[in-house]
Length: 265
Ligand code: IPD
Ligand code: CA
Image 1 (spheres, rainbow, N blue to C red):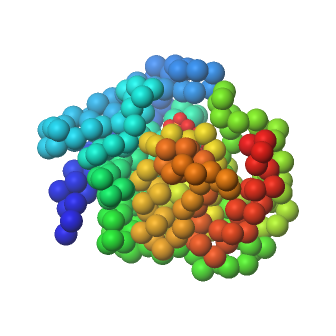
Image 2 (cartoon, rainbow, N blue to C red):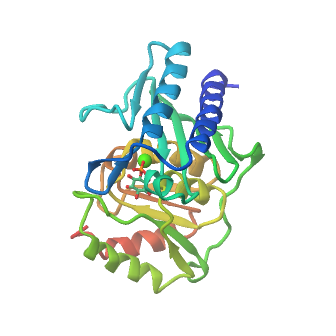
């Protein structure tokens, strides 16, 4: 099995990280990196645990991790992309929609991914060309093909510099008018895992970082779904942070709704 060693390291590190997160429930030492952009002692401890595990097995690989990333840290070559806690705001408030996200990429792109939700007892993982799994059982995207019966997930641009919330709510209202509903649960990584699992039919968000999306993007494609940037984008969504993901059947509908709001978003 290709990338078996990388997948094993990622899944073992995520399992231990999840235990650490669960033990730290009731976040301590909460700080603001920027207004409304939170980090806790648990984020830093979990990131240390995961990076040490990766370094001890693959010392020459590059690691891009949320709490230690520099502004010029790009995804290149053999590279690990780590979000120690995605959904830190939820974690701080005791909301269970929280996960650890670890992806591995090589020169051909994303190759292995794990997303583990400690308070929901779920582990999603994927291997390029070998499918996606939830707690070891193969996953598939949903079969909903009529947007009026679809459920979507998104994230709001609540942090400075991520986009204009007022314009964004215009887009959310536009999507809402044509479907069953739009959810904002607070973890882009888990939102993407939920697209892969067929629990939501599509996801859209801007202003994301590679560690928010890398593992989830592989999960969606390996579960049979489609990922793209926003209308008009030329950059890879992993790098641009402007992400559309879906079961494929509702992708064009979602893309066309989003297109009505670009610009200004
Ligand atoms: C955040 C979550 C959230 C998204 C934010 C991310 P964090 O990650 O993924 O859903 O809307 O843009 O920054 O800060 O909890 O790791
Ligand atoms: Ca994150």
